Image (cartoon, rainbow, N blue to C red; front, side, top):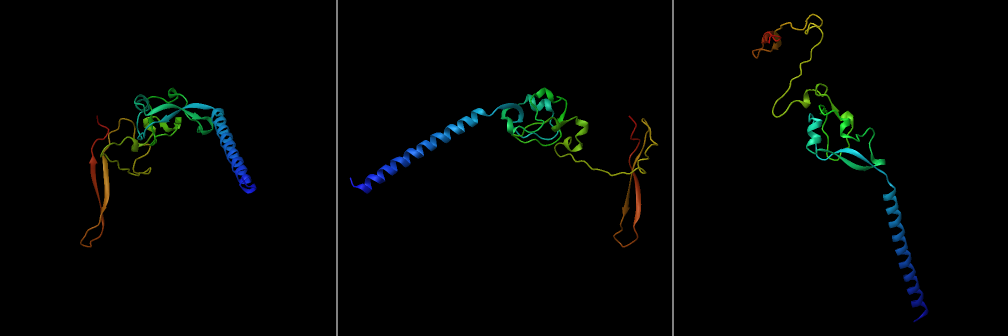
Length: 175
């Protein structure tokens, strides 16, 4: 064996040993890092949850489950026990699969807005009112009122615009 071939073989053997030592070292460091991370159980959505879903339904159907999460990945105020969420409350927003749950995601159904209560092909219409049309302070509980709509008609023959009022619902407070 010549001098050059011998040096090349020695260099290749040393390079292979060095590569093996680097692989072993990094594997051990990664293993130690994974073992040293503390975990905590957090309530997590297992599937997408529609807005307006009752907390009790989501928990009982398995849409919300406790899962181990690395402590540093836990979000602020994450729910660590399903009993921290009132079972009668509903989700106030869409919740996505894998998302950690906070108590603020669930609210009493009367605080979630009409959007979470409309299902299927039902629609809602918002009618903005100020203090004058609603007679603020003049109506009392038990009063019976008529709901009257007013709109402006724009004649197609070029005539002048005029307002029209119609009773939409009579005696609203009547049972």
